[in-house]
Image (cartoon, rainbow, N blue to C red; front, side):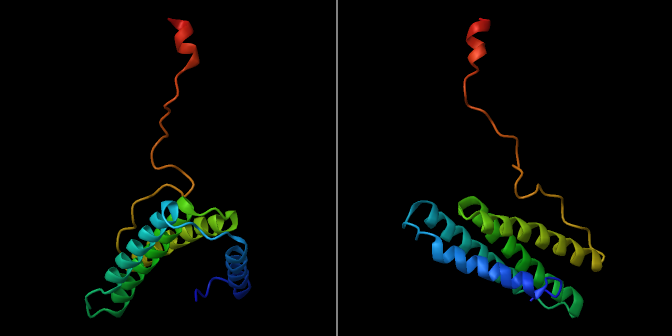
Length: 143
């Protein structure tokens, strides 16, 4: 449990998750649900492999080397929720998870004297400008 997150907030998050599970219709096999499950399984596999870090003999460094993949796993799973989830409350929580975990990764690296991770767009920002595939209606009139 994260000591910086008040127990009351954790209880609210748990209640929201339970409520969402109770009111959400079960997903149909295939489609987005299958892609979500595949992404989630991949995130879990990367996280577990990353947490199996080689011992360095430095407790602090070993702690960080195991925690960073754990936090990155949470980020990857939250991104899958943003891509495929429909519950707005859970999507907001997923956004918070991404920001919080990125900040904690940076803080752990800085505490060890390592360079911070590169900046990344916020979870609600596209990584690249959107491309428009519609035809400009004024284009025809200008010819």
